[in-house]
Length: 130
Image 1 (tube, helix red, strand yellow):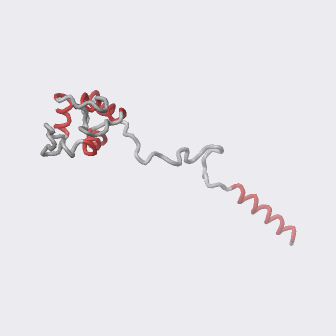
Image 2 (cartoon, one colour):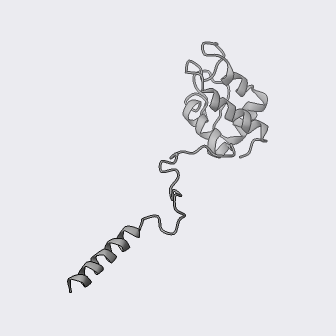
Image 3 (tube, helix red, strand yellow):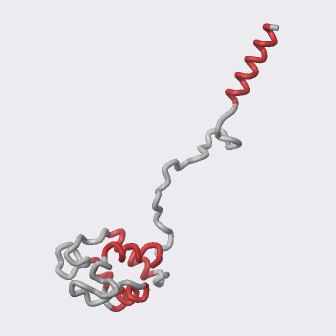
């Protein structure tokens, strides 16, 4: 009886030790190669909706709202108005000026990071995808 119990115990240990939480994956492969994915991944296509409008609402709308304030000459509250500002009002040039330039936007603020400015350039170069 003890022999059967030993055999059964060894078989159970072998059976349990051969199980893994990886399922049917290949040995050595990581079932979750990126355990901490970026919670805010950069979209592959820069569009007004997924990128540009967020920048505008965070940095420009306080002066360039539906009714411009603080001597802002234009509103930037719609896709069409932002597109026109890029095409006709030099928006990219204004946000690209160095910190301290009196014409830099956002006025009296901090220059946008170059990566953000590059998104505006990409949006323009890709045809102003909405």
